[in-house]
Length: 317
Image 1 (spheres, rainbow, N blue to C red):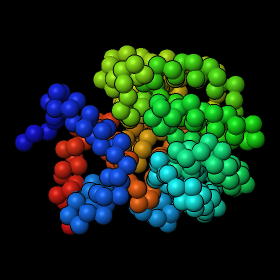
Image 2 (image 1 turned 60 degrees about the horizontal axis):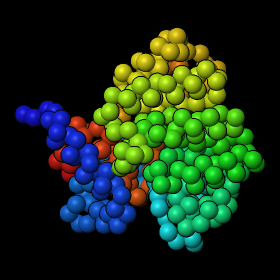
Image 3 (image 1 turned 120 degrees about the vertical axis):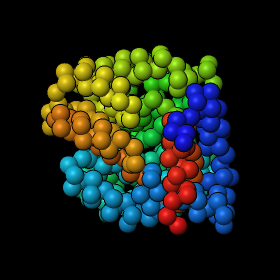
Image 4 (image 1 turned 180 degrees about the vertical axis):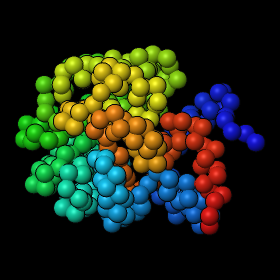
């Protein structure tokens, strides 16, 4: 029985998956396909809470009961219809009103209009920021491809002129991140540090398998920790988690400005281990019908997950 993919096969699989994650038509076609849809849903349920806000509410209730924080994102990206972008914004507003207290809201700005018009995205994001502020929860802007990073950071900065609780995600892979962090540190709101999963040219980003990537991640983690800025160390990489734990003195505290964050379906044992060491921990929960591109990116991050995906697809029917 094959339990791991050969390195060259894994690299090729990751490239294919990242390419699939750029095909916006597939996010509608795969779930709707009468044969592929049911198989893909069985794979997706490892990573996705469900298709409705109620599904997310039920999932985060258990996470909070287990002693972790939670963040919720309504899946969707690259929305190219202004009316729909505004309608989707209402789902985030409803989530802010209905999720348990202190559960944060995450979103792609391209879900609420950034792929159409900067001011539309800012107006819709401001509506979500107001709803989250009114309900005492953080709002976190997710990372997108490097071709949108300038626009994402521009909208984030504009929101920070009006709100204190809006955070943003930076990718350790991107060559530009060192400069971006210097500009972000004076701003309020949490900074979430991730490796980065998007298909990127080498001129803009380190390869996922580049040994320089964990070095960069730990360098940025130290910069955030030394600054005392609100931050999230979002990774499932055991070596990185151990490295960050070490630079934090292998000791956490309940009022720490940092937290360790993992995605739903990935790394719950890492969360428990860090919580046992006293670190604040968070699990990131997604819901919605546009789950296909998200699942492709999760599999691309670690192509060894393809073997589990095959098992999931062939599972209970």
